[in-house]
Length: 308
Image (cartoon, rainbow, N blue to C red; front, side):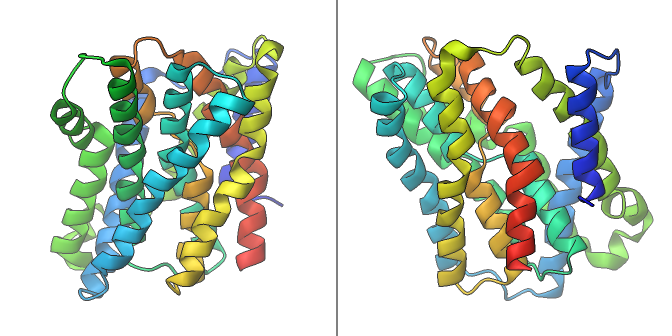
């Protein structure tokens, strides 16, 4: 049987494809994302609290470099093989160089369920990998097309103050500073409730995925094929670096899941504002409609069973 959180995604996907009236209200979804991001950050902070000397800046720098290498390699594939416009190539390279918080949460949950050890700094992988690809592709596009739509400093500020980054880093600092005793009054909700938040979040993601496919856009078959195949080679960037750094198996799983994922929250907001010619619908089709369900339903469970 698959992990229960994956079953919730499948339930949402099925309900959406059957055109059920099931929906998660927008306000509830916002609360779920806040609690989920806080929970991830706090769990990482608690691990750091118990192992103060665990952070290795050199390792984190190497992880961050993947956020620059992956979009540079993907961009020509999107341009010449998938045959996208320069704007859409930059957009989708940014989405795939960045990472999915939902995919991170699924990989983390599967690692915990399987008893796979996680390094204390694993939460930082999500924060570090979320931004570099977005910034790089925006800079590349602005340089090639002489856009004056905003300075890179403004883009950095907007990215670093986004809801996801604030919640992850804030939770990390709270967990690290207060430790298990200080967080005991809210532990039942924020820490122990992690899987419940994730299950309901994935229910909504299943509904969203179904909406992307109605109707199925066959005219974008090249992009859909790319989105279906890309997670498998991209995961090897995380696997290879994880083995090189001798990370514990749970952290290798999470890092591989991150490099195999594509952003559908942070990247769309940044790209929509900075690259006016990009079709965000194409990015959502690839990242949320195809890559996310393939990772959640198939790829990450296979990686977890292999690494476990």
